[in-house]
Image (cartoon, rainbow, N blue to C red):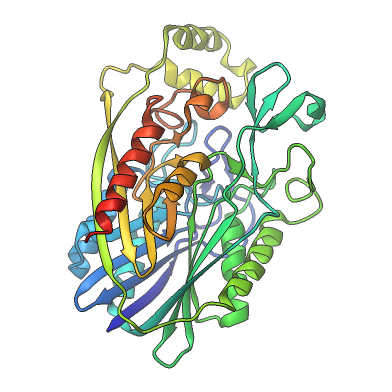
Length: 441
């Protein structure tokens, strides 16, 4: 028999706390635009357990995520490798417990986030009851665009200046438009919750970032609650969107979802909600006990280091820091720090899960869309979904093409892009090997 439990915990920081913009942090001066939540779902089949948690936060440091998962395991008895914790990556969430560029840690806020995740997971496990599940999939093409653009001079620029659109040639890649939905019903047939997987940066508030917000995942959640009931739980897991956002740089559709007249998070959330409702209409839930299995392993990625030219550039910036923008100051500050105590190897967890007819691949970091697509295309499972920023972050994991460019996501940094050029290939290879093995579990 399948049993499922849900819970959510409010992790909205108090007014006056920093929003982790990183380069130019600002104080929140207005009430939050909706709650930030940690939402958990616990699954159990004959004592075979799994806990998934989605938290409205920018990212979680790997060591912090390990501590959270250990706390959940101690409270529930669910093994560490059967617990996945992911950040939605909202750029208007609370501050983290680690220094993010020029934005200092806030341990009061990070403790609230950590407590919320652990409490939601623990309570979800306590709330286990008979349930049925079903899955469906569709597409949403209106809101996602590759933000890395090839220019006429051969360079690649992230988020180029729209005033110079004549210099733009084409996006480097295309988004993964897929929307994957799992619906969980009670034994009476009532909708209890949704798990939604869709790939797009939750950085849609343009310059109005003076209030905490869950961005479009929060608007999606509120929309589904309005349709199916306020007691319905919604877990949002971002797909591979390291190079995807809501700005149509080449003007193929409309610019208005970012910096225009529309409230982009609300518009995108509402549109995505309607897509989920359409997908849900064809989902048939079953109480057949689903297969639950997990494999979690670390691979070792090599670290990138700053070059001598990076160091010399930083020395020039340091001569007159105030004359430069906050992004340049942030990179320069880090480049002037010593690398002596930084390990040349990075442990990178690949977490694969079978849950019903879903194969889930959880990857830490902001993952470029090509990497997720390659995993899906090579997977032996019919339905494979990829969750980014799962169980921690190591900055961007980009493709070789980007790492060989001067684009922002390729600029070496412990916060930004700290892994070597072969990282994408090694992650895909290891994930596919685990998925193949998972098919035999």
